[in-house]
Image 1 (cartoon, rainbow, N blue to C red):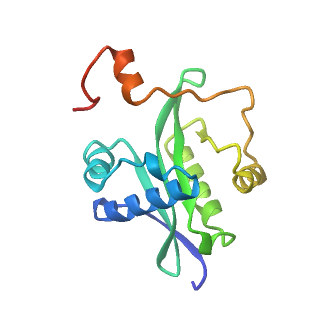
Image 2 (cartoon, rainbow, N blue to C red; image 1 turned 180 degrees about the vertical axis):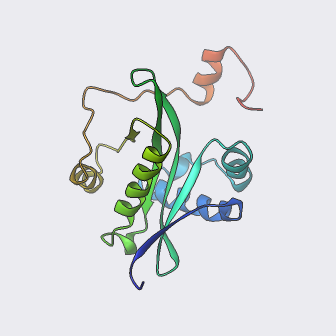
Length: 166
């Protein structure tokens, strides 16, 4: 259907395209300098180790957006959930239902897999994203803060001099 949005799951052959979307997202978030991923790392962790999954939103057969997600676990619910790490729609396709279609598919996957929730974070300055998520019925978890340990701090915390996962 012309102009309609369809969803497809990424395969190993999409690794370069996934990296391209990651880089576009990083540019949008003003974090391009933080992207160290390459095709080999993405292929290893997404497809060989199965640690994440990727969906593409297509408009007229062209990849317009992507969502990268993985399972987490809620001890309170006693079951898995889906954590949406990245959601990005290329600017020329925004407002055409791509983001909504990706989130709708993720919600369906969560229900099919018996998950108790679907969650993600959004940058504080991304008001269009915040407004979009709220319009879908998402709740802002204002009482929660995200913390991260990475790089040298991660090695120091672990008491190691090596890279994790090697």
